[in-house]
View 1 (cartoon, helix red, strand yellow):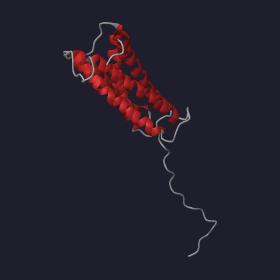
View 2: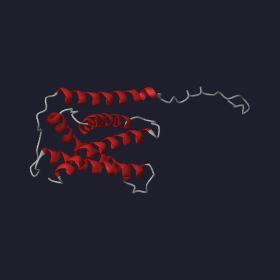
View 3: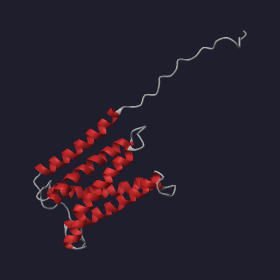
View 4: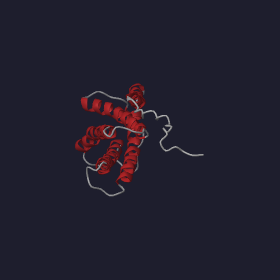
Length: 193
């Protein structure tokens, strides 16, 4: 059998053009974020506050426990911000910046859980003054946007701007939560344990 080098070659069907997922793929994380925020707010509003949920030995009050845990979370949120800037090449950083970013985020989140449980169970969603209302709203928002961020991390081909925006919302919410709770507590009652 001979092959004619001048013969037309058979071509394979061209692959379908790569389809970029549309904005609908962001609908699930957005809906989950909204559901988490609304569910926490609704629970906090309808639940009868108990006044206390926990206290740790060595602390003078639950307010001190919450304030110190929130301060630890805020510290790790700052580590998150700096390590994210290193991961995205905006600051020089070591090769383990991504690992630092992941673990500081895990610690920050884990430290916020007992604070949130106490806030929801012991205090509920309150609105008797603007500081408290903002704190209640942003607490619900924080856990909602954090949920969305965790879902988006598993998505492929995200636009490069999306995770920094959602991460920035998480950081901003946690910062304002700290300002309206721990900083307020320390300024009002002193830096106590």
